[in-house]
Structures are given as C-alpha cells and as structure tokens.
Amino acid sequence: MGLLDRLSDLLGLKNKEVHVLCLGLDNSGKTTIINKLKPSNAQSQDIVPTIGFSIEKFQSSSLPFTVFDMSGQGRYRNLWEHYYKDRQAIISVIDSSDRLRMVVAKEELDTLLNHPDSKHHRIPILFFANKMDLRDAVTSVKVSQLLCLENIKDKPWHICASDAIKGEGLQEVQNEILINVELPQI
Ligand code: G3D
Ligand code: MG
Image 1 (tube, rainbow, N blue to C red):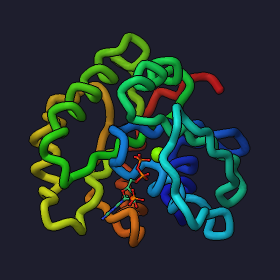
Image 2: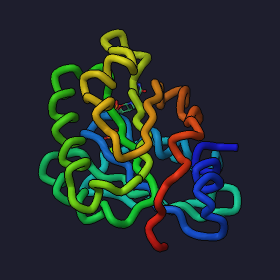
Image 3: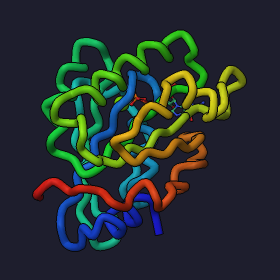
Image 4: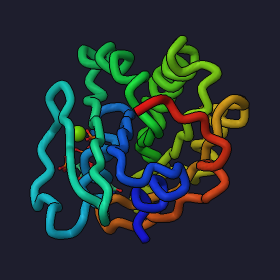
C-alpha cells in the first residue's frame, strides 16, 4: 500500500477527499515527490518549476487525493497560510544538500507552526530530508537538529531521508505519526 493510501486508511478517511499540503522552499523537490506519489500511470515525465502553486488531483486506490503543491519562491510564500486550514496532513520537503538555506527553511517552518490555524492542531507532518543522493547532503538526523524538530510537541511528525528522483524513502511513513489526529471537518 502506498504512502497516501496508508495515510487515508489510518485517518479513517474512507470515501472522502483527502487534502494534503506540500510545503518547502523552491527547488527542494516537492513537485518531484508529489509526482512519485501518484499512481504510475498518472506520473509526468517532465517536472517543471511550479509558478505560484499547483493543485494535483488524482486517485490513489479508491480515494481521491488533492495535493496542494505550494511554490517555495519567496513572493508566493504568503499563499501558504490560506491553505493551512484546508488540510488533513502536511508534507514538508527539505533539500538536505542546501545548508545555506536551511536557516530559511527553519524560518518557514516556524511560521507554519506558529500560525493560529496550525498551532495546537494535531495535523501530522511528514518531513522528507530530500536529495540524500547528493554528496553535500547532511543526514536526516542533522536536518532534524537544524530545524529543531524535537521542539514540535503539539503535532505528530516524522522525518524520512529521501531521494525523490529514484523514489527512495517516499513510502516509509511510520504509522504512529498518523494516530490520535484531530481531523478538521471535511
Ligand atoms: P520544487 O517543486 O520543490 O521547487 P522540484 O522542486 O521537484 O521542481 O525539483 C527541483 C530540482 O531538484 C529538479 O532538478 C529535480 O529533478 C531535483 N530533485 C528533486 N529531488 C531530488 C533528489 O532527491 N535528488 C536529486 N539529486 N535531485 C532532486 P532540475 O534539474 O529539473 O531543476
Ligand atoms: Mg514545484
């Protein structure tokens, strides 16, 4: 069973539409990851830079999924907050090889975590420490430290190392992050 199917299964979202918000700085690999999460017959061959944001709707097993792929480019970042409310889970993608912008990634994450629509809601967050294949990549443990993930107490979260090009690490979501989740009305 794929990651999205397990997500919907664990959240008990049978026969409903599942909304997942995918966030991260530009070039971190969001669109590549979302593409790999789609059923193989719906995957694109070419990934083009996302302008603003794109909404991907696809069927995963029997369930319709909507993934909001938010551009990380600075001028579009304030769009994120309009979508905080409208999600059952968040996927946050980090370029593990981009040490220079890790501090910006942390600022963006802090903005998300401190937003009134996000704070105190038990929305599961799945972090992908992406681009693990690159020589400059730091480990997922190091990414976790740089982003101070251990300070997140009000949300279940998990970090996975991934190589989105090969599709490695994308299905390894741990069940425990997805239990005890307060679901918004959908
Ligand atoms: P974004 O949607 O977060 O902006 P994209 O990022 O999915 O458009 O990916 C940005 C670039 O990073 C793309 O390269 C993509 O192929 C590459 N990429 C994504 N994931 C990985 C990964 O795990 N490893 C490596 N090495 N590269 C990755 P281009 O060259 O098309 O700009
Ligand atoms: Mg993109």
